Image (cartoon, rainbow, N blue to C red):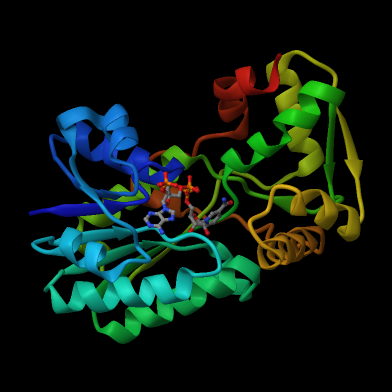
Length: 283
Ligand SMILES: NC(=O)c1ccc[n+]([C@@H]2O[C@H](COP(=O)([O-])OP(=O)(O)OC[C@H]3O[C@@H](n4cnc5c(N)ncnc54)[C@H](OP(=O)(O)O)[C@@H]3O)[C@@H](O)[C@H]2O)c1
């Protein structure tokens, strides 16, 4: 059985590849940069160079594959999911495991892009599993610059909270979904162990780094202005501002017990993530 992993040089996809390799599986990976992929995995993965915006390279990578792990990013998610699902159906792929988002439940911002992608995969008739994680702990790396230079975290989420999830848990659930037919047609809504305000998260990082940090609430306008400096597009900036507003309004605070149900252990805590990543927040 051949597994094709997309997004294999990214946060979740690389962990999925590593976890498959640990199980003595040599996955095929679709990557844009072969050198980078080779530096990550050497010969342990079968590297195919391609781009999910290019149907010819997607088809060539998908040929002969049994199960596809599909990662798409940005406003093109609906079109790219649809194109990959159509090719997968034509090429006889048995199952698609899509990295989606828990925000689909709110039809919100990036969640709305994933909702359309999920709909396209369902419409293709392919057997599917949708992995829907909440906000990644990894997102907090975006705070590194202001923590290092000013000892400050700024956010428009105010006292709203989110049950941040560790990418290793997302990958482990995704691998379970890839390897186990029981998850066909299932939506796996996964969160970390508890809901935390961004102020709580700031203090957990402060403890790990051994430094005093200050949390400041800012307006939607300021959050948008700051994000637009690193954003790919106005659409992505608007999506993030809407997401932070939803957190502030308490709409994304719920936890689930699905990580524990699927993996038989508790999800990884933000305290552990902060200690693993403390070096990113120090000079
Ligand atoms: N961050 C969150 O809080 C959150 C929450 C819920 C869901 N999600 C979803 O999780 C996904 C992101 O996962 P991640 O953080 O693991 O991603 P990531 O670290 O941003 O990596 C993205 C991966 O996709 C690859 N890629 C991008 N465009 C491509 C294209 N046109 N063709 C082929 N490959 C392409 C990248 O390759 P290169 O190395 O070549 O760039 C990289 O391997 C998104 O769908 C996002 O909406 C995120």
